[in-house]
Every structure is written in C-alpha cells, then in structure tokens.
Amino acid sequence: MHEYSIAAALADRVREQIELHRLRRVSVVRLRIGRLRGVVVENLSMFLGLLLEGTAAAGAKLEVDEVPIRLSCPACGMVAEAPEVWALHCPRCMGPAEIVAGKELTFVSLEAE
Ligand SMILES: [Zn+2]
Image (cartoon, rainbow, N blue to C red; front, side, top):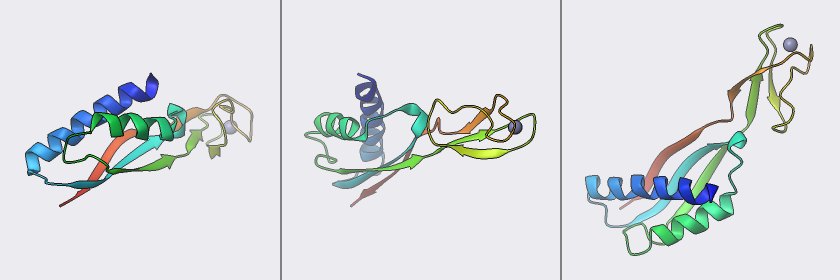
C-alpha cells in the first residue's frame, strides 16, 4: 500500500501538469526517490500505470533516479554514504550520524508532446 499512496499522489501531479500545459501525450515520468523510502519501483510503476489509464500519460514510462543514503557525523564531521538503512552510525568514530540524503521523494519532470 506504501507504493500505492505514492503512486496516487504522483498521478495527481501528472494530471495537474497535463491540464496545465494541455499535454496531448506524456511519454516519460521522472522521479527522484531516496533509498530510505524503501520504495519498490516495480510496484510503484505498476500502480502508476493503472492510475494513469485513460489519461494523456497512459503507458508512460517511469524513470526513477534513486538517491543513495548519505550520513553526516556531528561529532567528527565525516560525511559518508550508507550502504543500507541499518548502518546509521559514523564509519569513522561509530557515533550516531545524521541522515543528510536518502529521504527524497521528488517529482522531477515529464517528457511530453
Ligand atoms: Zn564520526
């Protein structure tokens, strides 16, 4: 259901853009998603396809730019990429790190005619 609610919000944005710019056909929908969101892109793409049926964006391709998780350590100033969500500590001093990237969920653009 997680992907469904994201797809619903995204479909609203796409419909808005179609209306605003009077688009006749949308071929690509671009999105930026942080890895911390834990979004399954295949599911998101499937739901979005269903939600956009019958619109100018029917059959549009979903292009996702996945943003890696980045950490910043307030104790030693280290900035590092975290391979997984569970590794939220500083790799240098092992102190608790702050998440500075990876929570993104941004509608980027449409490719349209
Ligand atoms: Zn540190």
